[in-house]
Length: 286
Image 1 (tube, one colour):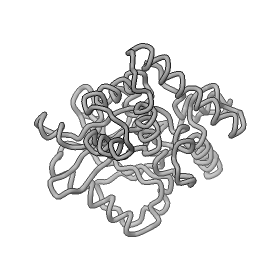
Image 2 (image 1 turned 180 degrees about the vertical axis):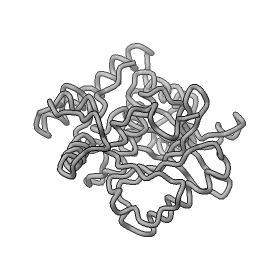
Image 3 (image 1 turned 135 degrees about the vertical axis):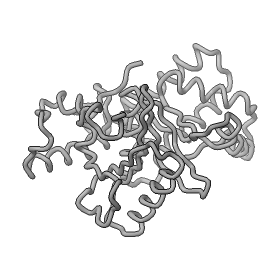
Image 4 (image 1 turned 60 degrees about the horizontal axis):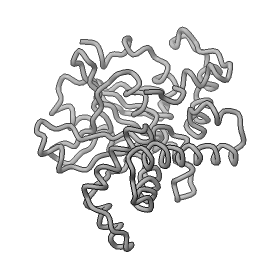
């Protein structure tokens, strides 16, 4: 499995020095890293798109998707319903981190006059994950039945796909940051699920290390809005009741705006979070 550049690899590719001591950064150095992260979230980590203009970048990434569809899915698995496959790809890449239900998507295709079986959609989704175009995140559940009846969350393998397939026309750093965190967790060997509490609160990720230690991670690009801060904190606290061994993380692009966060929740500057050695992080200490 070959990942696109991580944020650290992205910096090294740009010949940007990666600091050895994150705790000794000056305000200017920290600001430069934060700016570089925002650029990374927009362009993504595929080596071929680094340093090219936006039009060329879009064309290269679209070509990558076409190769994944035609060579790695259609030809390899002898897929005949290419139209439904393309609908599925556009939907998944255009809704990063969105809840996905095969039943609902099947109904959408049916309303458009596209005939495809539910089992076929399950197969197509697995093919797209196998060819490393998307990553599937299941709900954390003690029973297989609860896991199966809840929708999955689907992420593109790279945030660079988001501005191409998102039809809103807006730069959505929140979706890009959540996607990058999801991929980084997998890159570092974590087992990753999302959490939906019994009260209905949702936490983006429950990351579990091979030795069993856990971290509940909520991702929020902007915490300047009080209601947003309270919502994210409430979800983490509710999930902590069901996962008492997990350390609590709030990863954001605006750590300076994280006022009134209760003790026990670690607010992390996203630019530094991606660069911290995983074994030094509190959530994964036994």
